Image (cartoon, rainbow, N blue to C red; front, side, top):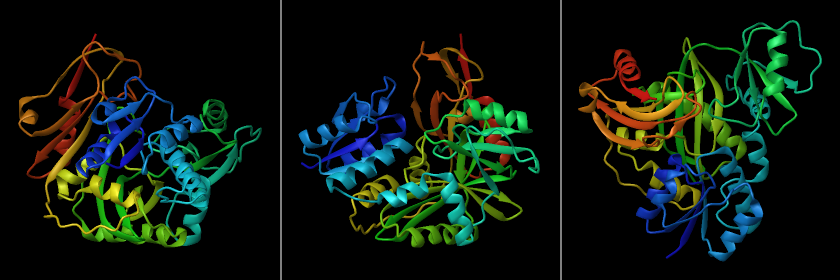
Length: 382
């Protein structure tokens, strides 16, 4: 039996772990965090920090790994690309492409070159002594090497910029100031096979407690919108000569102008692959594994069109987790649930800590339903 190493083991990696095992591979996961519940879905795991490249390489050689699959984090993806290139395993990206896609400043300039709308931005050194006085506030201050809303601050004046620069977490010596665009947040995910988009999906993302942390997502059944976003992403695919793997992008829709604000080559997080699979019937996780392996695949699947909502449950405050209250009208709509916290676990950062991930199915989704989920699914803490 061939062995697959998944660089990761958190709850976000469960779709990939399960898909690998369903395909008949022996699955090994990596990750040193004590809360990585994805490990229990694997055949074997190493409680190992995957930023330690020498140790990871040792596991790959000792276990005679056939394929490396990146888990759901930027670091996991970056290290997977480095390792596949070094060891000559399943190579799904080159290092030059990696340097562009995981640097928001370089990506922003490439988007401008290709005619892909993106918010106006300015590069700023972390040690900047003076700030451009002609800037129009509010602005977003972003690290260039993070994704998923991490490290973003809204700044309203020069002093707030200087304070935010002192606290920013990044491996670079610069960040981005970006114009703040208010609008609907749209997710676009696609799977590649030999340079072609073989499947794509659009969803609306909304937030709950933390405005830069997506909590709730549901499908958008608008083929015209999807075709437009596909056109933009295809420009990047062609220019960078991308062949395999996935892309997950976020756009801001303001008056039918779609601004690309983020893109990654890893799978989307918080069981978003299950949202795709429950909504459409497409075996997204299976196809992702095959694509990362560089294997042409022919899929026979029955398309579905189900109105499913993926909701990440957050607490409204820190404390010891007690239970989650789900009202009866939503309990009857619940089709899948993964609890991440156990009773008695300490919630230390309620703006970030996901307590559970739930999927609900409705006949039709509207804003009132989304608001009800956010309001009535409650976390009790002591």
